[in-house]
Figure 1 (cartoon, rainbow, N blue to C red):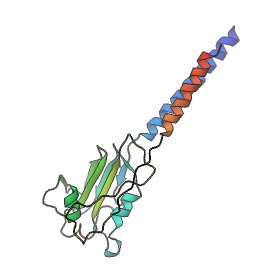
Figure 2: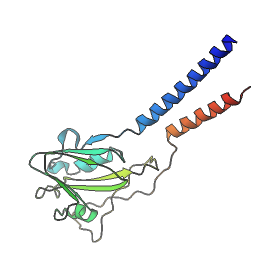
Figure 3: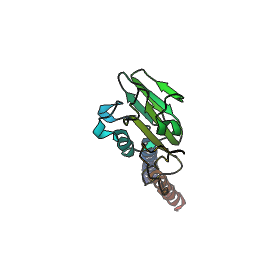
Length: 191
């Protein structure tokens, strides 16, 4: 009888430990990240030979709802703008404007975010960034879709190529949780 109780207790302990680890793994996957825009260079006008600096930086990262962007700069500013203002480097109607040297922008929804420098000619020289925040209901295995410029399109801005689709995948956490539930059901139903 004592052996039966200790065996049952040990089995219950293993089950709860497994559930705890699964929840911990899932929560770690959902943790928000703060991205330093431009990495060590920060937010500054790129060299003439490196005008695609911020486009390349954004393409190397995956942004999720809840993440944030940290812009670090001197004698400059960062403006969140709409698509048209982004492609035309227009600073006249920003959604939000920052000029304090260190600005944090929370990515609070899926979809596109457009940022440009408020300093004269910096945007035209490449100090602008398009961020695509992934929809939390979809997990994409492909790069985020490129922005498609509004009409009319000015010829001095390069034309990005649009994405052809989004792949849907099952989150590893959901698969792991399904395996745990299956395991628990088999343990509980055995005589």
